[in-house]
Image (cartoon, rainbow over all chains, first blue to last red; front, top):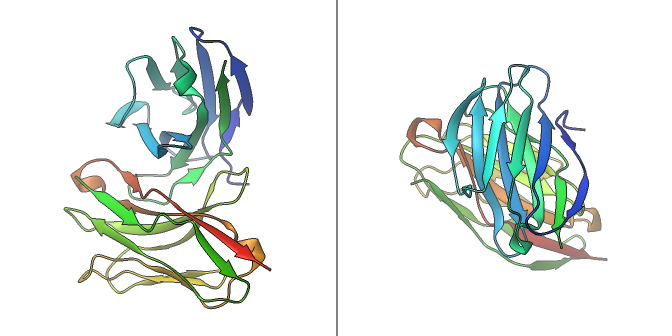
Length: 112
Length: 113
């Protein structure tokens, strides 16, 4: 158990819909990262937050957005969902930059 | 920008065989280097890490040495087990020059009894 909690673990939704994935980082960790893992594209970095502020942005679509709240939990919002958005979405956390990052078990999203 | 290259596999070995998974990196600064492992149906777990040149990370019989001169961090294990079957990711962290964590594409390892 890494200490990073993600909900929901599985989600099935229809195209065009919107979903929110939630992440609670390890106690004391200030950075939260979001990754997308699909079969054909491997592990893709989406976005990082540090203590409530956006720190780095990767290949995140405009239909996707994220935020980190004052209690340090984070949410990833995915809207206007397409079939190609079906993937495993990971949250990870670390104390500071360059430290080891710890992954949650992921949220499986299936868009039908 | 920073990048990580690793052999993509899949790699199939017999139990007790020697394992090497190559990893090379490109970074502007002086990154920390990591190996993560993902077992079927699970998230990524830290396997080992090294934070400066010539450091050797080790865990569960796996080893990797940070080679700055060859910009490499190859993963090795002397005798693999069926339970080592997983996907292995090489990664670097270099906050000073851009995105914090960069992962390689992953190498799938299958160990046959």
